[in-house]
Amino acid sequence: MRSKPHDMAMAELYRSDPALALDVINGILEDGNQAELLVVLRQLAQAAGGVQAVAEQAHLNPTQLYRTLSPNGNPALSSLTAILKAMGLRLAVRPLETEIPAHMA
Image (cartoon, rainbow, N blue to C red; front, side, top):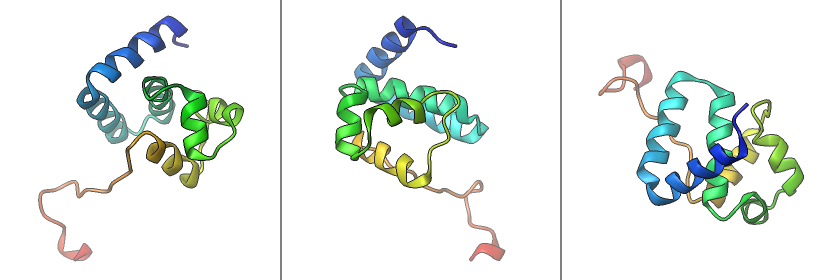
């Protein structure tokens, strides 16, 4: 498990370089590692004013948000979208290829 000082250092890095945070999240989404995604989202929540502030904006219980963003968390899509929205982000789906396959058109 990562240490709190590491999480705070990453939060500061993401606060100073939001583009890096997006690159990290998108890389994790490509790999499909949910535990890593939740750790980075927790770090981003710290960067966005703290978990308490994000919980308030997302209309979620702060204690539940801490649990949700733990490496073992399993957020519902509605919670995940509310958390992302509170941080000024959203989920998006993009094709793997440059063009949408014929069977999807």
